[in-house]
Length: 319
Image 1 (cartoon, one colour):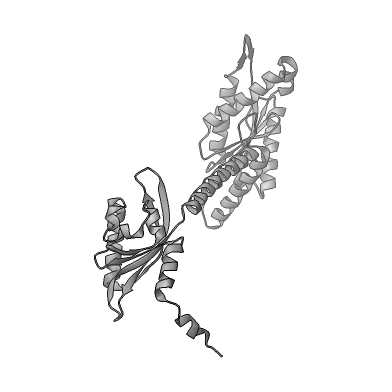
Image 2 (cartoon, rainbow, N blue to C red; image 1 turned 90 degrees about the vertical axis):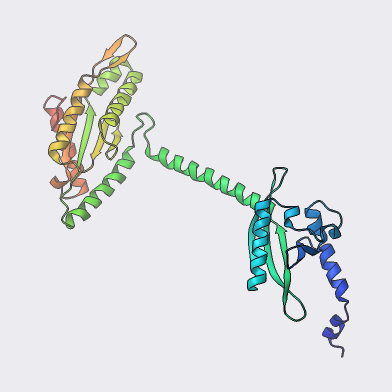
């Protein structure tokens, strides 16, 4: 039986080399010790717009590439000649003179003679521009999706009329704040926070008398005052209908009541004006502090009770 290896050994090396150099879609090149080309594949010549690989012989990267690119290639090859260590799969950016960009996946190796002495370098490169462009387009699409998702998340917690955070987000933020203060208190931190509920007085009468458009303007008006008169670390919410809520970070009950009283006075002295109609507004406010409550539910109840106390005492009050 014939040994297959014997058959393979009969294949002319020249035929093998010519087949590879003339048919490989990847560029293949060999360089001497000075990094000048001594043998090139057909694909390599075509990369430079040449019809004959022999036209590359004796030339270097400086004849075809931008100087910075060519200098880097030269230094890499000299390091390979000195160290014998190859460079595998490096991604290279080739900015062409016509303004286009080609991306290459390149590998470079030491080129040995029959005695094992390094006499130059050889390498291959593959044009991965379509893949790189696809990756960049995918990255752009992903960025757009991230922005769209952020926008959707934002819209899901924003009340469209007032521009404040909505009822659901109030409970999410209140739980975070409550749990954070609970952990801090266990560590001996005495910081606290307060919650205020605001209710537009006689809001039904405003709607019935002036119409729902004016009622909507009243809600926006209160929301604008709340946003303007609170800190960036506080949270303002439309709790529902004509009710609003504020989470006052690092604020004890005394300071919280002063803030609430300030808001009450501003609302009282800031009417909604529509055409020739002036609509006077007042709000009733209830305030409770984290330290007064046994739980988040208890804090909400205490704040709600304070609000209804203000309304029962004649409205336009803070409790």
